[in-house]
Length: 177
Length: 177
Image: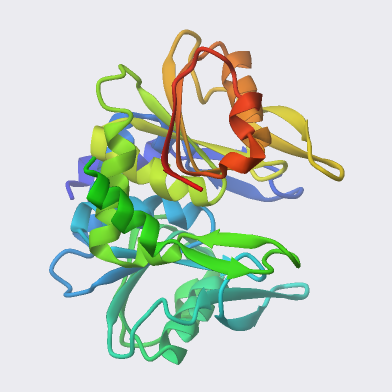
């Protein structure tokens, strides 16, 4: 993707101060979504990182990750698999907990979502502390799948989330802050 | 869409008994998503209902609605707007409450998500009681937008949700149960 296009996407991300709590500056991607040209460009950028990687499914993380993962899966003719917060998936699940600054969180995947040996790719909107992505990677591994790589629309580099991700797997971040 | 394709999609929906609570049979669409051919066919069916309607954006409802709304927006070259549960959208919002069997729920839209006079289309995975869709329609109206129609992957007809939706707006349900 051209650097001018990346700059265009970057400039459309909106800073919202004190969300979700005081002192935090939230990166709001909804202006990227609601503009047809920017949304197309965003999905272009995500799919470019996945093309030719020989994967059969894209794993999207609840809820904003669904947006890019689903659009990319449709563009590339792949299957889509949701990873969701605990209690949201109706059938048999594999689940894993991970630590937050205060407390813990739990994500789940359907037990039949990935076939043993299948190569899949993970997509989410933001790489922050890396806890959710690392947990999703663990779920793919437990089902016997091969995680071929991960793509994030944004990476908040100061949180060093990439250090929590599995080694030797390509990680693409379209925008870095 | 051919009736044989509809039958194919229908047969891939999985009944999960006693979810989310005892006595309820949940229609699980994840088998439709994880299979590349079925996912493509599903997005084909959704986009067919929106093509040529002269809309500029697709409104997707948190969280499963995002999957089909985002893929359809990308296919059709439209913008994507999320309607989310209370407290999830970071910027200024318009919000509305609606009644549930016990208690109430609240959904929100960003105040700048729809421009006055803009024609938009709503997409969600399931039309059940119609409460969420009616609330989302109200949000579009409050922003001055024109809701041109709604598409649901599934309609649970025995819940008569279509009676709660605005009159004189086309409603398409790909699968009915």
